[in-house]
Length: 288
Image 1 (cartoon, helix red, strand yellow):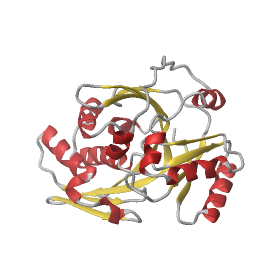
Image 2 (cartoon, one colour):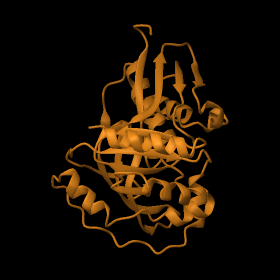
Image 3 (cartoon, one colour):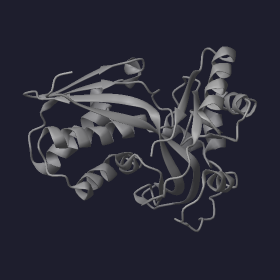
Image 4 (tube, one colour):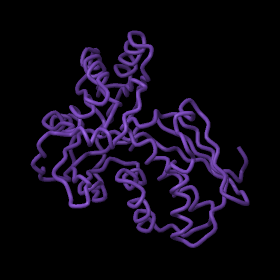
């Protein structure tokens, strides 16, 4: 890699729970969620170029469709417009995460693009301005700028950084069936959840896990209506040794299991890959 090339890791996001608490007049749902980030994700490289040039490679590059629909492209243009600078630079996106998977793949790429191009263009570090741009790009993009454990409310824009907790270890599983968020919300027929009283006090992983077991993902049934294979994944995760919690992330179709150690997560991932070779299965560890 050239010394003039900047590389940024764009981690996958996991909704440890997701409650829908209402619907606004503009059609957007209000929510409450704890979002965690893990050491599995996409990679982006940024280098000087006389125009905006984006290359996409990696195992899931073919699933991205039109470049102009890509949040990397949209983030570059929004940043350019906001700071009134020409949109220049070469971006190489290595797409390691499944597309339309409920783990914020597009959002985390957009957040990485805002950070990468801001550095490439020599812009001042202004987190508040980047957050304002991020909010216009999508509900998960602001949290993806943090890349830390956060409590999110509103439409995702109201965030509170949570204290670090003990390590949490995961297995992510996706059936490799794109599950568009809009389709899942169209299928949502459940009642809205009563808003939780937020507590930002420090908790151990054990205490946080006990809280999470009382919560849920309100989009699970709707996501299963769109992608029935989600039920099979949740059942398979529940059957793995040492699984402490299993749940859908976001609007799916990625599900996750929580384990007490790297070793138990790795063993569960190995068993799931052996039993379900058509699925995307990845052990992951929470970022701090």
